[in-house]
Length: 196
Image 1 (tube, rainbow, N blue to C red):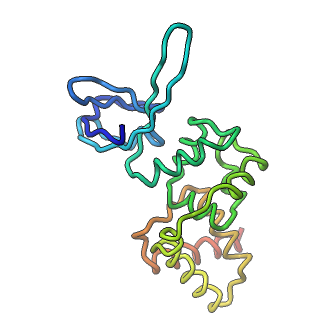
Image 2: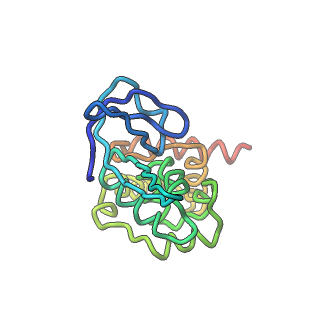
Image 3: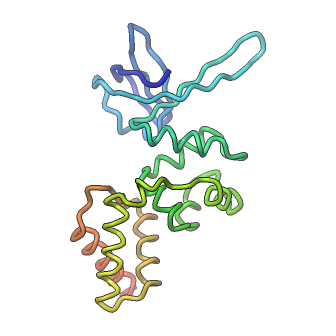
């Protein structure tokens, strides 16, 4: 199965229930509380078969985009990272995760429960960010913002520390975050860190 389109009938902190063809399916997702009950949603599905005594239990993991499913599959293949930890990683947002991998940001990955330095290094070694991401708006905007801050006299260390701090505080870097918003947020955070 590649994907389903169904109605969200229930959500809690761990999973959602999706009604499709008059059947309710439990689907584990990265951020269940972001799914609105009684709304229809397309989810790309990863199916896991658990072989138990005299039965096979199927688990479904759902993703709003194919890119998130692909990243989940790559993470799930790493020894020591199961599907629950992979979902926990994805709960921080695919753009943030791609940025963390691209910049080898250990500190941000340490926020994820179940990850240690050894596993984080394996993630950096084994997962390659696609060229489409490297050329995406988020990376371009961050790079442009870094250059603008450097021209204003901020050091690269100050800038990188600030970006890590914003990620720790759940600031989400998105494709549609414009340059002026990034710049103003970074300057504010750098100035705040200097006054504390």
